[in-house]
Structures are given as structure tokens and as C-alpha cells.
Length: 250
Image (tube, rainbow, N blue to C red; front, side, top):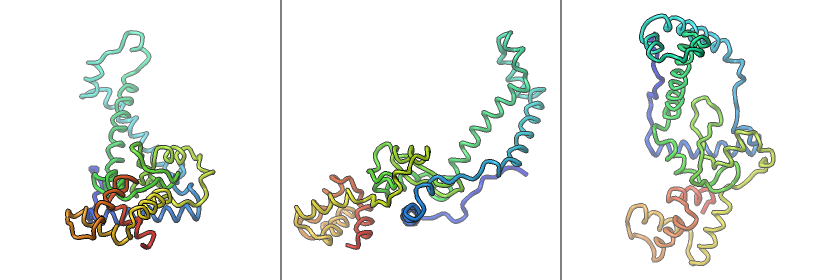
């Protein structure tokens, strides 16, 4: 049987991707609050796949021995001779195996990237950034050094973390982050301060956001500049303004 990559038979729209990821991030926020940050780094025991990996290893060795005898791999080895002393230390079977392992590594990398595209297509990073305000590990703003992190390598999408949060999770060094946090608190306090200074209402912020997004001027005086300042100063995207307002029930 020839290998055929898994394909999503039910592709989803851009809006559905956003809604899916908003729900996904909220799911992990709740899971972290209930069970801790270890839920962001769940790995299946290595020995589970050992029988399958052993079979793959046997196939690779047998294929390497066969390829080193004749055909394009044998020709490649002959065309790329080793220095005399090294030639006696590296048999062709091993050289062919090394070449095959490298080809397998590239294949695995491509297939792994394809699993990220299964649900979100090729816009995983942009879509994740569009719905993420702060890192759910550190509570700090997502900066230019953002990292896509997979809580479980089972096909579920990655979550965008800042570099420090990603490092903490990958190293398992998150015990002092186990307290429940509100990752939007700093930005929310900034927005409330600006709202008080400008004497604006939450309704005006929503109107201004809608007007800025659509290019319309159908809003109350001052609403559009106010919304634009929220986008600029706390560095909050128009979509995230709505998400944050909804989460605060205003």
C-alpha cells in the first residue's frame, strides 16, 4: 500500500478557525486552573510505540543494506568517496543507513508540519496571534518572540506562548506559576485608565472598533479615535478588543 497523507475532509472557514481557537485557549485556561501547567506538556510514554519503531528500524536497516549494493544510492556513495583511512571505518551499508535516516528526518519534519495544517491550514501562527492577548503561562504580553507550543502531539493545534512561557513549559519549570492568573489584567487596567481619561463608554469603544474595522464613520463623536488608540497603545487587535470586552461582560 502506498503512503497517503491524512487530509481534512471537512475544512473550516476563517471565522470558524477563530472561534475554534478561542474555545481551545479557554479550554486550556480552565484546565490549567484545575490541574496546573503540566497539562500544557503531556507526552505519551516512549515504550508505547517501541514495537512499531522497532519494525521501522528493521525496515531501514534492510533497505540500507540493499541500497548499498546497487542502484542510485550505491552510485552516490561511489561518486562521493571517503578519505582512505575513513573508508575502512565507514562501510557502505552504514553510509546508506545514515543517508536514509537523514531522508527520514526530512520526511518526518514535513509530515509533522502537515499535521499542524490539518485543521488550520497554513495560517496557524497568524490565526493563533489574532486571538491571543497574553501568554497563558506567564501572563506577559505575546511579543515578537512568540512560540507555537503543542500541549499534546496528537494533531490538536498549537497554542501561542511567549518565549519565556514556552521555555518554562518545555523544561517543566513551572511550579511557581501554578497560581490561577488573569492573563489580560494588565491590558484591561490600561484600557480602563484610557476610558476614564477620555470619558468614553464601553458602547462607544465597541462602536469605534466596528467603525475602524469597516471604514465607516457611523459612530458617536470620539468613538473611532478612542478605539484606534486602544489598538495602538495597549497593542490590542480589533478582534481581541471584542473578545476582551465580551470576557468582561461590558
